[in-house]
Image (tube, rainbow, N blue to C red):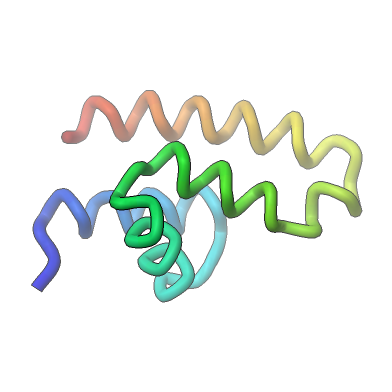
Length: 74
């Protein structure tokens, strides 16, 4: 069973990235639960950044807000 901290991280990741729970778990585990690193990897691998020129800027703002909120939860 995942710890409460890991469950919160998974939920925050899914919320911030808009990805599937399984993908969030895989990325978080592969980065040893480094939230910022996993989120960065997700957006670097995402083709969505190339399809909309404003997506990257909006994503960075959303990530920054999410990380700020998340850091106060744990």
